[in-house]
Length: 389
Ligand SMILES: C[S@@+](CC[C@H](N)C(=O)[O-])C[C@H]1O[C@@H](n2cnc3c(N)ncnc32)[C@H](O)[C@@H]1O
Image (cartoon, rainbow, N blue to C red; front, side, top):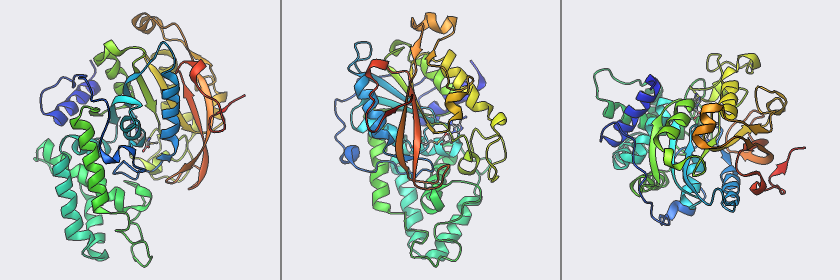
């Protein structure tokens, strides 16, 4: 077992405070009854790169796959690039999947989801305090607090639990008060330093709405719909899920992967596939984007359960043999014998979307590429999900 997987375990332990084993899959209630289960917005984070509308399309793919005799239903959805987790929250709320695991390599984002899930009321109190003392006290107080959180780093000697609560508060505060919700780099406070615009630093900090969304996350965790949250790299997540939930392999688990963009992701996320320093304005050097190739190779050769992958569309994705030119994934020898699967066909679709935050082409509509190993006969093509010739 690698160090990274052990770290993933320790995050599980930090989240659950019950030791180092992952949470068991226990029976889930039939329906999520919380009022937010069908609301338009469910995530407390307004995440850069979150795609409005895609969750419903992913839901359409999974529901269609339930018609296949090999799948019937999805027990566990895994989202290794969780970010704002809008897809997981929607699909679990709608009952499309029974439950989910979230993971992200960014320690701030992972701490946010861990604390929101397992220590909801502490985070609610912490963020309500920030709102009362600073955001409602006027823009200069709020700006001072924005500077405080931007500069904040964990205080040495404090406990992991204290650090995680502060990290989670930092994540939520900056996400709601920074331009496009960007958590690091050059992005400044909403409304700028001068705060002369009608949309000032507090305009996206609706406390009552945020508390309701945090409580929804806590509810999903309490009712065993949100099974766990890991701070881990995508590979450890995919591998860890396969080894901890063997009985669900290969057809009861689906991974939904939404990796960083091919270009400019270093500007949006501190953990990006972009090997250049974060904040640089040049596009990704394609040859340097090895992580994209590693992910493609893993999905083609190693993956032990089905997956759906979304990418900001770039023609190179489908032209490059080292990316997704292939039409099937063929698990390597040991993986094939573990799951009994010799090959999975890869279905490819294009979807027109509206992005909620800056995309490769800037804010607005863009085309999304969806690739999946769900049973091909069930993958719809229609006006929304266009087949690729
Ligand atoms: C495109 S965003 C995901 C957006 C998400 N689907 C949503 O709706 O908000 C990509 C995410 O991947 C995370 N990430 C980047 N590199 C990673 C890695 N190597 N392993 C796991 N997560 C990573 C980033 O921190 C970021 O949250």
